[in-house]
Length: 198
Image 1 (cartoon, rainbow, N blue to C red):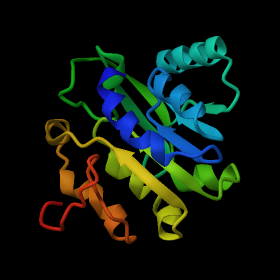
Image 2 (cartoon, rainbow, N blue to C red; image 1 turned 45 degrees about the vertical axis):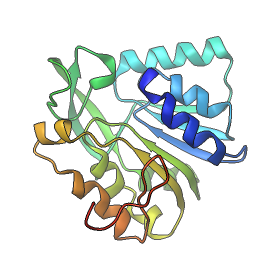
Image 3 (cartoon, helix red, strand yellow; image 1 turned 30 degrees about the horizontal axis):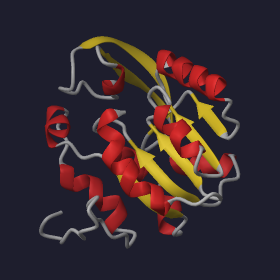
Image 4 (tube, helix red, strand yellow; image 1 turned 135 degrees about the vertical axis):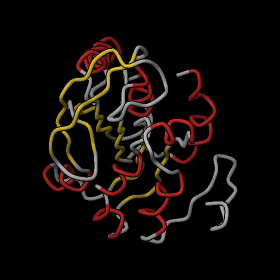
């Protein structure tokens, strides 16, 4: 979570107590708990069972009451995919990324943002945090309905070109699901990115 400090400082003033948050790629739960202390409810998604257990342990230790955890990956369509389990818990990915060596592969259940929101009565996502090691575009494609209906407020994701290139993806494609629905993309320092930059 050390590398998250800067964006937490930027995001904190934008969160309010009645916000609904989706934390896609919960990892070991540190950020989910941080968000839960500042918002109404956090829905966390983590496909790796060990990470999920660590998150549950943090919730119990901190006595957090407003986190709903799901052992799911979120993607462009529902189904089952293989999770590449990496040597570092924060690098697990649905693709064999260059972040760290792959130790094993496990089957994980995949759902979409749209289907999850529909089945859980979520009418609006105030903050959508995505940290999925190269599969950000897939998560956003699975949120097309919510994005189209303007039911998603802020979206935050990390773009690491080396990770994307290692699994045959391109950074500019991540922005398409947002731009197609009229969203504006800006950097953490508040600068709006031009179409040429994107």
